[in-house]
Length: 458
Image 1 (tube, rainbow, N blue to C red):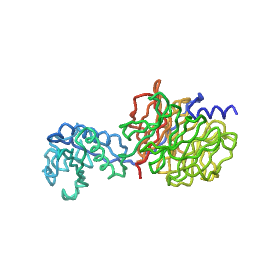
Image 2 (image 1 turned 135 degrees about the vertical axis):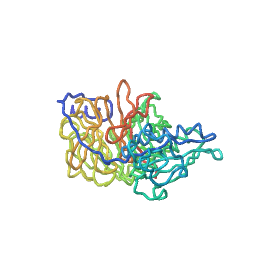
Image 3 (image 1 turned 90 degrees about the vertical axis):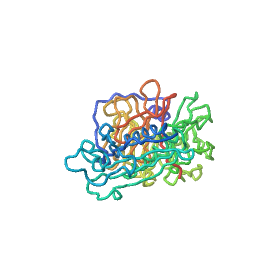
Image 4 (image 1 turned 45 degrees about the vertical axis):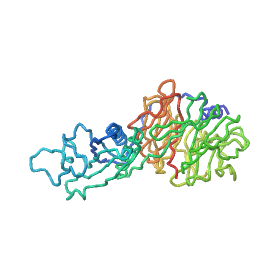
């Protein structure tokens, strides 16, 4: 019972256990796209009122491509002095033998030191009070016969004539480039998180890139552990606003509270949605004893108990790809560990080795990997982010020597992970590539934690 109480406090973020474990290095390889294509993108130029905004557009494109694990962006220091801005600048064919690359032929960009596979180019302008960008992407493979055959796409991007518009256009152009290599655009997706910047732990939401951060709840209490429906419409979370920890549901767009019936219990918490967003699984003490897993309709009706393990069962996460299996955090073997089971809570299998504390599981949209927090690896005793291939149980460590790192959540593109990192007195929201590279913070104000990446509304 003492462990169950401690684990309960850990799960709700009100306490913690510190364990000192023998150093164990855990390594693996989850690279999904070996042999990444090399992309060169020239600095776009602009005229008129757009001239003062084109630098923001260029930096946005470069940042998006540099942070993507799908491509390698060739540094601009390697580019030729003459760079094309539009198709009419291009010269067909191959440069005469021995002539140095000038940049106006596509094949110039495939030669060392650039050695690119694709070239992006374009320009901006003002048109009727709007910011307009013309953007192209070309293959620079030397075996392509004509410029028309080399063109991958050419598009026009229209946005507001201000910095926000230039950023938006840059995101869309970069997303179109990444889409050629299987990337999904994150534009329109959001991140829900917990912040105390208003004086209490409330639920906040921001755009995927950290912009437009706004407060969703105003309860003046502890509201924590948010989750989101797969259709991007609903945020569920645990709040003490009414006394005991209960489940609340809000519309992510309007902030309006949605109907939900909480069972009479000392705790109802930790919601996960089925892929169709119509049912949930959550933890409750409604049956007495430690928290167990229950399933219900999204409004709390049609309740059914799933587990009767005799140990605390929290943080269930349904596989978004299959909808037929889930992972959760259980104390059935002593320390909190991650378990795998079907939707009827049968075929139970422990995934983590049983050493240290393993918590905060989160499914990759591919339904193959989970990310989680664990007190093993290169910093025994401190939580770090790991990724596991569920079938093989191969584990890769993504964070180390960077403070306390918890609550990972995958982006809809399977290529990024958002998480909370406490590197001083306060925790902040960080994002990284799914291979652990490209780490950068999204928040700076207050203490911020427990992020969840939300799909664009369907």
